[in-house]
Amino acid sequence: MEKKIILSPSIMCGDLVNLEKSINELEAVGMDTLHIDVIDGSFSPSMPLGIETIKRMREITSMNFDVHIMSNDNEFFIGEMLKIGVEGITFHHETSLHVDRYIQLIKNAGTKVGVALNPATPLNVLDYALPEIDRVCLMLINPGFATNKAEKQIPYALKKITDLRRLVEEQDLEIDIQVDGRVSLATIPDLLDAGATNLVLGSTSLFIAGNTLAENRQLLSEAVNKSVLVR
Image 1 (tube, rainbow, N blue to C red):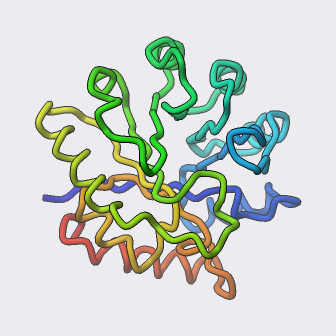
Image 2 (cartoon, helix red, strand yellow; image 1 turned 45 degrees about the vertical axis):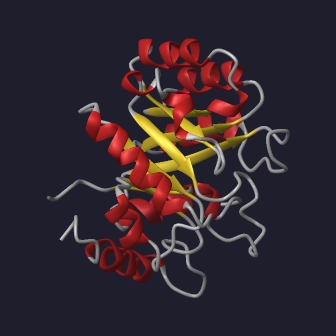
């Protein structure tokens, strides 16, 4: 059974003082989506991109903007991203008092909506919301701590993906299963075989240091094609 895989390069791994060059290079190797982390510095100790920067990015590219909000004030950032005109918004369940309200705010704007879950957050928090959303983002490391190179992907990553895929199939839903965190060339085939349909790409895949972007793009294609569900 073949499935379409969405490749979502994390612009946080690009050149943060020359984002236009990085975006152009990603377009040149065939990428059509940008994964954009919006972090408030409180949810986790990082704040790579500001709202005005994302607004400027929107002006220079037509790539799909896949925004991942990591904030303690989701409604504010949802509103700002909708104003910019992004294609998809994912917010964290853990910091959402009014999950359904946020889902409806995004859906009513005609934007794809996702809910992100931290590594240890159980899938059952989505029991009622799952049919209402387009995407689930499973964090495979603790979000916002990617600079800690010693942190490895959670050992139960494949089980969580498999369990989510089963829930989606049981309800006959069309939901994108996104995985984020240490999505490496070595782990990609297993992640896809477990049921992932969307790969957030960072320093262990599309942005491996020492290689050109084109070289990493080729290695990425080879890793994806090792999946028995993609071949």
